[in-house]
Image (cartoon, rainbow, N blue to C red; front, side, top):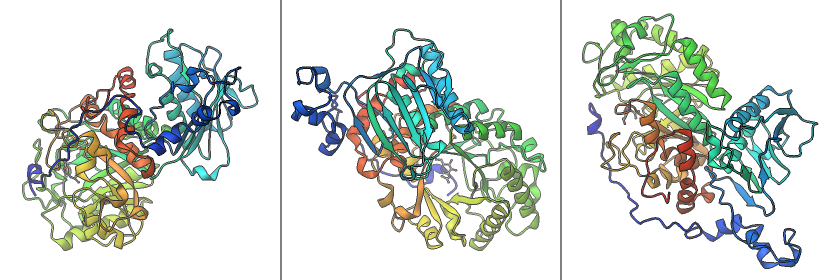
Length: 555
Ligand code: TNX
């Protein structure tokens, strides 16, 4: 394949029926019962209900579903309670154990969300002080929650978030954020808003440990600030991996001190021309730290042995490409490659992996490995296996696109399925795990429909429902739940030049895929999801996040 337009085209499943706006219609009975676990007894057993009025009968307000918690991704269990709401006031504080630096930092992030819009001081105080009117963030041994789960209880007098580990508290705070009015995202103080959170109890933990997005900063370069903006969006939807595609034919985007020509010669342009760019190691470390504070792991990808034209401009001695390396601003693929049988190649790979591994607190290094029609089967496999050894030597676990399953994989290696239903299944034979990024469902650079201005169509056109309505466990032959580490949504940037364009393609398919990766399959339902999602648009408006107003969503 030398042109992405020649990659297989696909038919499109479309949802044409207009969505009904009444929020109760179309929700299955189990979900309704779950929602009304407390209200239903109120209706049936007036006298016995704790929340009945003085005369024993519930007020109309208590019978009416006054809240519609539009939490995305859907929590494992959510029980609406009746009674008075928790209200943020000028005396609201956040209470934490200040001895835990991570918990304190999450409290500070929460405070910095609440202060601008409410105009309240929102002090952070230590556990032991009164929790009346406070938001309490607390670690507690509760192994049922795993490393990322949390419990959230909202009562009139307090909000309590508990978790087994700091990441869980952070995710619980994101849920609380979504339960607050959307104006909470405002950067300006809004004094007329009642900052109410209706009483609710939630228990939640993720289905998969890898809930990822990928940003291609090679075809078009994105600034540190833009990458941070994308991290913010991932965090809001409890996604925990940002895979950065740092090198491709059009650009090399990270400083490697021992190989200065990678950026000096390889970073200076991008698709369509223009200045390109790269991250210095300090800038990259700043992205990593920013993401880490939001429980997002940065997974660096250096795409090799193909997709390496930009690297080869400065180091042509390791080229086995079909054309001489020179700056490239087009969008074809499959013409460049490192030689697999030169020691100089592995010396460069070692330098690159060593320096990037040293900047990476996360466990993973992604070697790309996709689309190399030039090397022989044997040479390709040799390159993957030697790179796998180098990555292990520098203390990282290797990830690669599904093609790497043509080599002998270590069981700790992870294959990322994207194009076919079968290649990644070969990885499973080696005991390797799989990330699901099927292009027809998860490629956020695919158009929503034929009229979408940005994006491509080689895999499919993907409406929100197509991104949402599939089950990873049954999607691929030979890959079952226990083989899957998670789901990742890539944005390739051939047609995407800035973060506003990224947001347009990501929103709202990114939250749809966040729910695919987080929520138990049994809790997922398109109609209910589309209604919950609709409540997020005002939030995106306050955040200044661009989005596609899909006709499938009852906005
Ligand atoms: C396929 S997915 C590619 C990328 C392109 C993308 C465009 C994959 C591993 N390779 O090189 O940018 O399609 O959608």
